[in-house]
Image (tube, rainbow, N blue to C red; front, side):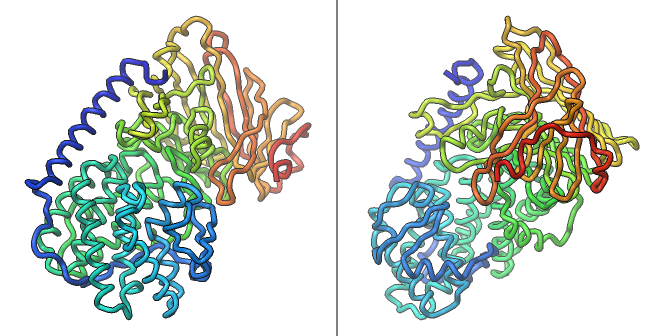
Length: 579
């Protein structure tokens, strides 16, 4: 089993004890002597409606009115029935439905008909609240629903009668109470922090809740302190979590001001640290690098969040707390994963991609990781080391995941063990930047340590790489594969000299060469395209550590329009072949 190692069992045991302890506390707090009763008087009205800064599409309001609910890439036609009574297309579809974030599309349409439709749909949910499926009360779904109902309350409550207003508020209070009671039982990381945000925003939006505001602020500050790292990254190491959190924290900061209160220093500091990290993870085309669960970049939300960046602080180059490196020279951007695995409870989206890197030049990404996927089968593929632009040994991932279906259902697909000793050395010089990093993810079982050095010239035109395997291999288990996954827009051509020519749509080209081992071209898949999965190509170097423990390779940029000097090619993989 993947969790048979001593370290994996120890991590899992420690995590299980923590979960059982939190659940025991939750039972006590929700009992008759619980201290998480509703503090103060029951609210009778909403006094503010914080802004929802996510972009909306008013054309979707017409689909929803017609009974078409397009969530999670699937459309369900309710046929005139309540969407909460039909069979969901998938769990992901159901989570979006019960999260109610789609109300913003109805508000964007801004008509009496859509207000009436929104009110009817909320009334439908309240009517079936007692028999709603369990996933409707998962912490992140519940938190999204609370936030959506509060931010879209003008849409829901305008022209509403007093009876509906009271039913709406009573349901909202019940849900906030449930969030407060089950807070410790929420999965660590983003779901728990989102729960804290939802309770704080609800407390600020309701009348007479000064005590709840104080309690919610304290819990929020505690979570921000634990989850937002000193360099602004998130403890899960997923760049996309930063964007999702800022989309909720920015309106929350405004809500404090609207109620005449000062946001806490922890909240202000977290936002100020996170903002520069958005630019840290961006490629030259504006998209995020695909590390640890980051999928396609929501460009509209990213632009909206960045518009709130008044300070425009310079992002760090060496994000040592988050475990990433950024090199930006001459229009060439290299982002490299130099971190270990996150804490066990925060590793649900983490990947086994230590020492993987991504490269973009000009307006195009060239070398990428495969990205992230929503469905379970492809999610497992995307998290494996082979789905990243780094080295694998014996087609084995450098981290080990929970494999038991029972454990996955109970605790999630966590990383049980992986690289724990990750060393990084960075040198910035006039000639360029050198980053050398190593990890011990293959030490147990293989006896080898992977070390990668990247040297990027000051003009960004040359990248020299060296992958080294040190230690004593366990028997014959020393076969390695180094992969360089290509973006689907890149055309890969084999030259007559055995090198690989990578050509971007604008004509910019990179020559990949490896003197010791001739690189091969193979098929790959790109999982994070907005249009779904796309076939692409990868450059592959294979060998044995006992024969070639040091593998040097080079990427050299060729300027656009310089095709006359390009070498002759003898084959193509990528580009139109897969279109």
